Length: 283
Image (cartoon, rainbow, N blue to C red; front, side, top):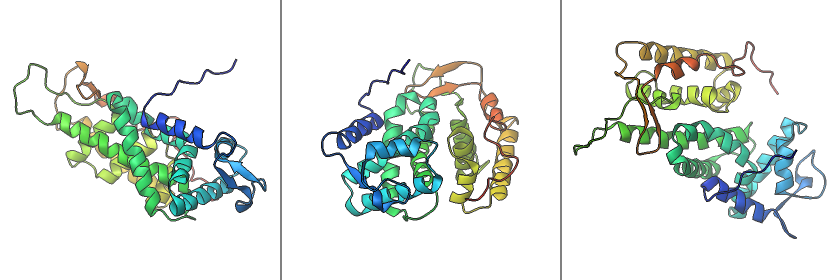
């Protein structure tokens, strides 16, 4: 039985998907000349078909990199529809990249998506075609922008108000991304280490990709993450961690607020399918 497609809304990502569909359908769809990329058919390839090729497991990594590289080059040179085309082709990865952030703060889903797209476009303007794992780098930059928004939202919610209110004061945040933000504000770990934990434990970024982005060896990156996680875990389970109770509620911002912050952070120490016993092979 075919899976029923989710109806599109007016969210930033859904608006992008709708625009991408318009650009890549009809009698004259936006297409890439396949002769420019080794491994593709020697004909114009509509970007909708190109997107399907990128997602198909049979497509070799070097072909995927070459496709994204060519799309980035077009987007930087011409902008407009090619920027939309590139973002639309990479949209499935962008959705996965911010999914955990949206779950942490569903009331700010549109803002998170909009910030991710803004960070994506900003990164596009400064990225260098030809760099390895270009699609992963663009997703990393998009997630960083969305994470900054989420951390700012948390800081705003945690700040004491100047006017008396009848509602209960904000309690500690339960989602791991927000616990990490608290750890950064408390000086337990750096913002870069929080992003490393968040992207590789909660997000969709592989540790090998993170090591490449940080210009580190795989095992150096692994040790850096492990040390940072150990500091967070020690802090969360210490007497220095802010007091909390067992009450759960949702704040006015739409972000999940939970008194039980210890359990999610401990779960980041071991997540099935995310840890490697050996470094990945070099391609």
